[in-house]
Length: 466
Image (cartoon, rainbow, N blue to C red):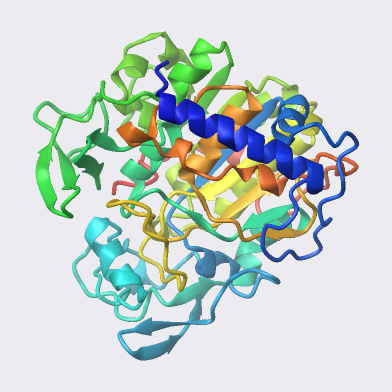
């Protein structure tokens, strides 16, 4: 795996800073906390947080959900940065309460592409979410200015209340699921120093299995959107976590739903489907379908060291899915891990891949010409997660990859000069306190039991098509 001198220096400086921080307070001042343990002194003041992380955590699980914002799911969560109103231009719009199962007039998806994200962002004013449309063509009006009923998202609130809610998590760029999931395996969407993948390929299924002639779209560093100007979505340009994990002999799996009648030997909704070396190499055996397989693997102690979990469309929190099973699905995965033999050595990151068109009041910091994108929720769960803690640290999807790199002592995926964001991202290590007594697992109550998911018939539909 290549590694630039600048990237190596950056990591050395980070590790020195982390070690210095350990001499003061482990995970000291990261913005306000609710019920925080406060960062006790480590038992050995010379042990840096990264060493504590890698000695305590042996399994890292990334559970990905779809298309919601922090304000939308966690409105009013104690200590979290939420706001009960938004703006449409200069007009103040109170947020209204909605259900996962929407009125029939709204049972179509809101467009959530690069241009609609920029319309909502509006140069940092966060006042343009009304300037969007549904996939059926009609304008959204004030529908995006909403939050979900507390009863429907209670499992998420329970997880956040017991462990850590990171309320400043951002995708690396504006846009939808395709580039978000690329960032979740690679930390990069750049094809060249001045062009990036943006939005999604123009045919399904995405990736190397796309029909011949499929193209992708480009965004230039001059902020020019070039529809259809990108390559066939079977990439050789990107180094991914598969490369670094394989080189270090760290085991991994990616649990993914089947689409269009496929299975793990063919068509699945996995971003690794767009990475040629994985799609047509031995690593394809690590793409596991259906995703419900994770429940049995977790319960039996057969999880690999690093895991991605992608839901079936019906369980995805997708706005158009007309289903309220998403929180129960995540609870089922978390409960299987928590009640399984690997709980004491596991960290779980639950993250939503993009904002889905919904309002959020917090303007993302612009770190480069692609983003950061609009804020999404993130929950960190572990026996060493700070109990009842709201973490205001600015994170991005590269932060999740950096946590994996620190956990398994891996190099960065690639240098910052090539667009890899894990080099610049702040690690989520602040969400942990390895000096606290490990938290015993308490089952997360949920409306739908694990048997609902173990027995459900796959929808064969992609969790998102934009």
